[in-house]
Length: 408
Image 1 (cartoon, rainbow, N blue to C red):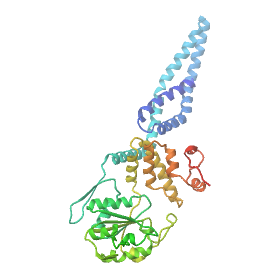
Image 2 (tube, rainbow, N blue to C red; image 1 turned 60 degrees about the vertical axis):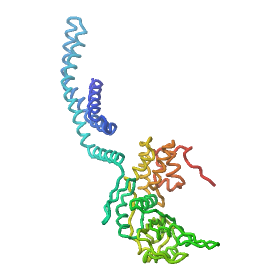
Image 3 (cartoon, rainbow, N blue to C red; image 1 turned 30 degrees about the vertical axis):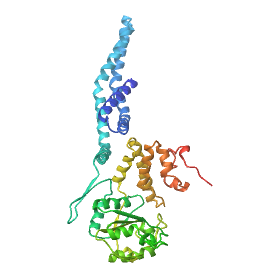
Image 4 (cartoon, helix red, strand yellow; image 1 turned 135 degrees about the horizontal axis):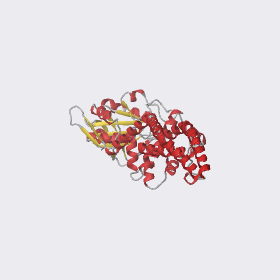
């Protein structure tokens, strides 16, 4: 009898749960229904047994007596079976109610998770379907429209450049600072000139020089300064402080001494610099950055460029159009590693570039495990792997053929 009751409960509960939860989180809600039924099943079995036990026994005794009198043992079995069937039908409504109550409780418990999942899916669909168009209104000119996957800080940058200010974009590696400058140049209709600075960048790369034949060679900075354009000085906090000090006059007075003479800045000259720090020296992540002179820093408007997660998501999915689910899984892991590294202040960088490059590798045929090994977790020490939870018990390890070999 217990087997029959258990089978009926599981059948009804499974049917109700399947109808209610079809299309959303089947595993999670089915577990909730099963847990509720498991808790109630002993009580139900006892109740059915109490209601049917006595009457079934009496019916059995009467049937046996009748069988002895008539010699028909089959009558006893029929009587008992009929009584049990009647009692089971009587309690069928209780089984339905139990399954319904369990379903309702599971839905109420899962409602916050359901709403969060729905919001995330809607946001993802919107991000994928909505064209990347940014419109910025600037005083005295027509609205600027940029059709590109660009950082949300673009309106702030355009406002500062419209005010003829020199701008320093500060943010972690891979947040799109250089691309932001490129998009600003396109939006303002200016030609982009660019130069990446380092500790040994010579002044001739900024101010130009005369060769042995007396011919002057100009530079990207000279062209933007004299003829107009947006000058991008990449990695400003990696440049030599002495070189940057030579730019102070040009930035403050808009007049600069080049190798061939004094030049006044064009009215459309704009300058954008990028850095990973605020110019106060290196930190635990960017240890080689220079401390910049206060007089140089005082000539810049500083705009923060943090990671734009919506832009990151869009670019990752665009890199793997045929393998979007794997791209989402890769991005989720990159973000998890980034959060753990930030929380534990590890000297590690998991920038948006990791996800974007990884998506391209996925589209080219690599597996997620290979992408993680080649692009995301390569070169990590055993201590860092442990701190990031990469070798935790129960966690799927990267296949041996995907792990980079160690040298030396």
